[in-house]
Length: 123
Image 1 (cartoon, rainbow, N blue to C red):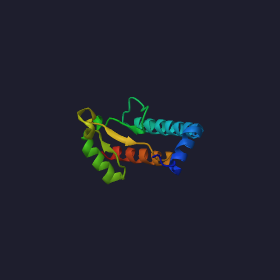
Image 2 (image 1 turned 90 degrees about the vertical axis):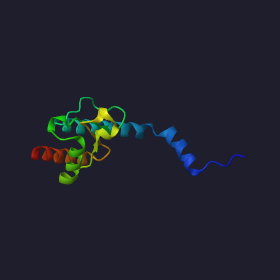
Image 3 (image 1 turned 180 degrees about the horizontal axis):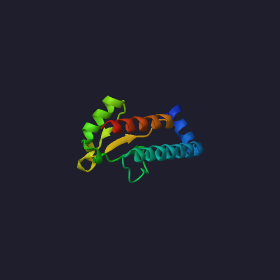
Image 4 (image 1 turned 90 degrees about the horizontal axis):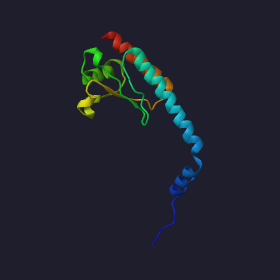
């Protein structure tokens, strides 16, 4: 026996039928966040060769700074209160990189880049 559709099922159908405009706005917003963040990381010396295309994470290299990715991430958190994930937790190819989410406001991204720049200057 089938039960009656729930409110969330009606909402899901409505979203699938009518959310194109909202989806496009969010795609554009995340592209803007990505571009702002990746440009900022590159400007301060964290090389991001390829801008991410399918997620909201950047994966910059920290190999030029003489710290492991774990040490860099721990010190960045402790000294500047910026949380990133060491790339090595994703396997050997992530060694010397950081996973940085840009699923926050543009102002938070700008502040994160400022703090990362200050941390790098202190090394």
